[in-house]
Image 1: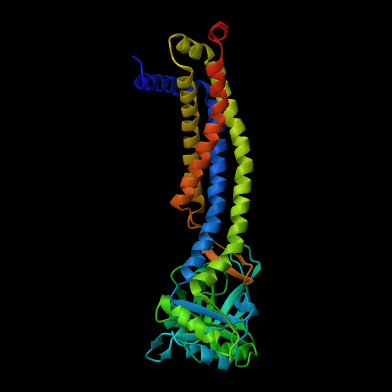
Image 2: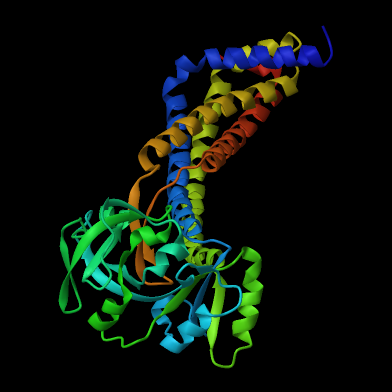
Length: 399
């Protein structure tokens, strides 16, 4: 039999013989699989941190909402707006209106030192002063436990991620805020966004607690639609009474995730690359060993008419199978170990802690498998060439 079909049968036969011989070299094969699994596990695990952080930031933003800061400010921590400016923003064209007026929330943003449950070390946890309008502006705040804080009282609610990551924010506990004790009355969710890492309270009382007068740091507004953003920005940009910086909420939070996700991705790929070099050498060693152990078998097949290309492809397929096994194991272990693992980290643009969950996504698992396949193919290529080029007479004389 000749032609492409015969060649495919040759590749299948040699690949089958190679896979059947794995038990005779189990130690080297296992080392290769473990090495590749380690590369994929570390890569997927590290990148899942960036994916989780990015997802938390993305869930915080919407195109039909806008964030207004003082001109030149990159975050709420370094912004400042007076009461008159917040009123002008609320009355600007494009701002949606509810039954109680414009859907605009002037907010205060301060930090509390709270201990991390995992380490006991203090961390900067955001405490946001809001008014009742903030609930309509956000639109996704749900009380999961306890009740909403009462306006006009020293009470606060905690985001679900903050309650999991930091001590002292359980319902019924009190926290020292300024000069007074504040009661934690409820735990809330916010659609997976960064608000779940915050504490919320009455903005007017928080101003008094921190001697902030009648100043704010940001204004969040809900627009009539995503398309109303340009009308809103044009109005405020041309108003000489205000000096502000505006951004869509989605763009604002996306920008705040760039620094950390870039750092994590860079470190993740660097570590995986260094580990991959070792895994490639492991695969080379395994496949060179396979070629050496099967040199007489390969020479016999070639003497029977098996082509060199079929030998090359079959050995690379064998290396690919081993790599995919290792990649699948590494991806599976990464999913079990990291997916939905809750932690918190510093957002360097707001200097506050953001609590989030790692996310091992299908895209990350696919990326890990692609890395495994590349390691296997590179590790199998040169041994396969050696096998195909080995002189038949020399190979048949080897013991």
